[in-house]
Every structure is written in structure tokens, then in C-alpha cells.
Length: 208
Image (cartoon, rainbow, N blue to C red):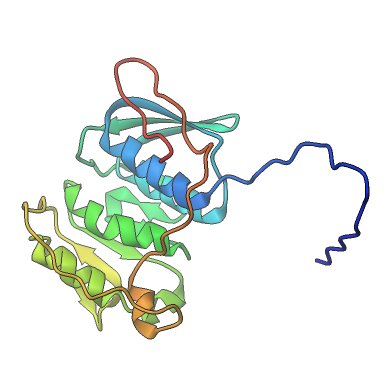
């Protein structure tokens, strides 16, 4: 893509649509899945990475419906129940959750899979097998989550055991480009427009 900018002496007038953040979309969907009741997430990104998160949640028994530019998410109140839904490679009945190529989905679901009612194995694209997440696995283990992974890389098998209240120690922030950085999710800048208030008595995740 080539962008050419030319100067002008006249005022610039118009409207600009700021793209919504897929990072906020992941977080809104996950929070809605943990809530009890139905949340409405609007103005959401529909990238492949977000679709993998949606597929994973559906396989875990969360009802996610797409209506226009909104997702209507009915959570299970802090637990997941494997279903026979097959979505974007995730198969709850077989205990398989497909992360695709979404690192954010992997980071969230590695811990959240412990809330399922059966062991879950997190898989993804072939190159994920070379993606170290040792820092994440160590932190989750400190919280009492039982998991198995070869060479600290996916696939990761997580046992159905709720994490205990604990303090987890993590390494100091790493420099961008460092190999250790691949173990941690990125912190995106905050953008408005990812979520809207939920209907009914349930509170929906909102942009921060």
C-alpha cells in the first residue's frame, strides 16, 4: 500500500472511522463468557484471531451469536462445559481447543481451560510448537493449575482444576525483540468502541 500526503491551505473536514481493537475484542469476549447471563459486545473486530477465540468459547459451552456488528454472549458464570460443537477446529467433546495463529487466544485460554469440566488440549498452527510460553506456564502452575507441555511450547494439556488464590511471581518486563518477550501477551493501546452495556441484569465488559 502506498500513502501519498499532500499539503493543503484549506481546513480539513470529514469523518474518520477508527478501527476497533482485536485485543479489546478478545478481552470483552472472555469476560462475557465468565459472566452469568447475556452480554452484548458491539463494534467488535472480526479478524481471524477473534474468530478463533469465539470458536474456542463455543466449544466450551458458551453461547455466542453474531448479530450485525454485535456478539451476544451468554456466559456460564465462571465455568465451562465441553460441548459437541465444532468451530474453527475446536472440538469440545474431544477435548481439543484450536488457537489457530492467535497468541492472545493462547495466553487467555491456557489458564481458562482449567475451568472446563474435562481435560483440554490447546493446539494451534504448526509453528506454535516452537513458540515458548514458559513464563506463562510457570505462573499458572504457581496458581495451582495442572498442565503438561513439551519443551514449554504448545500443545498444552490442562486439567480441570480451578486455580487457587495465590501470588504468582513473573520476570521483569522484557525488551521488545527479546526472545523472552514471546512468552507474554502484548499490551495494546486502549481504544474506545469495543463493548456496550449488557442487557438484563448482567453487566457486560466495557472498554477501559
